[in-house]
Image 1 (cartoon, rainbow, N blue to C red):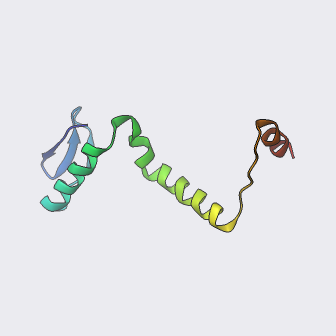
Image 2: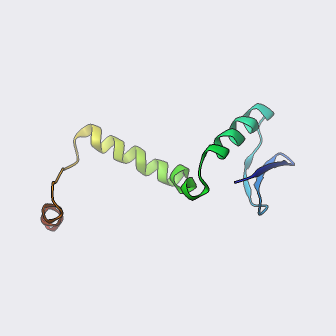
Length: 80
């Protein structure tokens, strides 16, 4: 995804606002990060998805997960 600096906003190639420029150093850092992320993977970095990732990490740390070795076992577990 190409981004550009325009009137203190970061805009994508379609003109959609993607963020606000706080300072040029932050802009350059963000531009470098965006160039390293595949456009098809941007959903993973959304605030909503990252919140879910943190919730999953907490569940794993607390041991609130179950492991199954076969799909049939998973189905049985989900039916309980």
